[in-house]
Length: 183
Image (tube, rainbow, N blue to C red; front, top):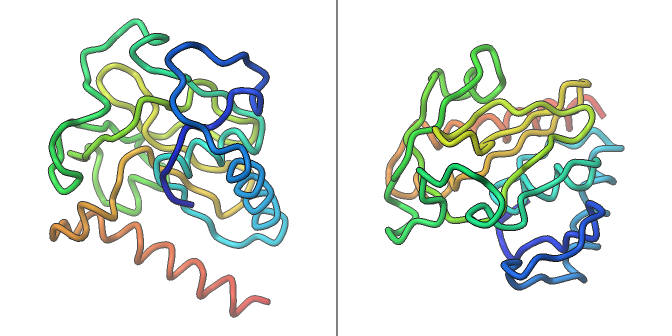
């Protein structure tokens, strides 16, 4: 699941705030249905940026509609001006989490292009990475479903030659191959 426009807050039972960006309600409906269908079929899923947020919302989690307006600590700039290929902040990983196992790291230096983020993790998920200002940067399913999400953009870092970010895609391809063989 890839990035894109803001997710309409009606999907997590909130009224829009003034700082909400452009939404695409048709895409919201389609993507949430696709996520739920993939989960029912145990298809491995990696959400990136909006994709992580959609996964969280699809299973009952909430979002910050706008980090600067709704989060008290703004020490990290979450919508960097630099290109996506340039990492600009540190993410701290939960030891033993899937993201820590995938990367072999306890911290990542990542990019950031978002103003929405996971606020409350959905039931059945846990937050497994954070920025210094406590904004969640990764979630994973804790009920055996092959579902993971990251707030940053490992695809851009991979294209810039970051071999650690490339591990996310090797991991997903490996999980998909195992899933396909099992069906």
